Amino acid sequence: MRILGIDPGYAIVGYGVVDHDKMSYTPVEYGAVTTDAGTLFEERLRVVFEGICQIIDRTHPEVISIEQLFYYSNQTTVIYVAEARGVILLAARLKGIPVYEYTPMQVKLAVTGYGKAVKKQVQEMTRRLLKLDAVPKPDDTADALAMAICHGNCFGNRLFGR
Image 1 (cartoon, one colour):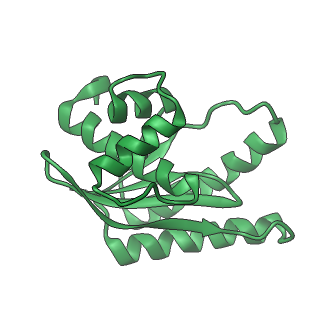
Image 2 (cartoon, rainbow, N blue to C red):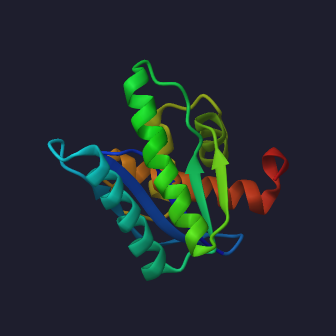
């Protein structure tokens, strides 16, 4: 199964495409869609939408795994991230790709076996599972790869009632 994991945002959208064969994970492509701080927000949304569409067209994922939105301390930030998530979900819908959403705790549990793992533990397990030399940068990219692994572990093992 080819999985596109996405860590949503409007300045940096991390993405990671992995192939999962129930026994192992193989990284296909990973990186980030970025927008500049001085850019109009509507233009940032266009860049995110087109970037995700290009990634889907280039890598042909079977599913998309995306982080569920959770409350940030800054209400403005959560609104902007929600709007960026909206264009990502629109891209998935227009391309006919099913979307699965996971909470940060579900990702931690699926990747490390511990729902309260710290970010560095999740990143290191992601690196190990994908047999990478280093943790991908920026952090959003590593988080997106963890999202993809989460779906493979959760969906393949039917964790969380999926």
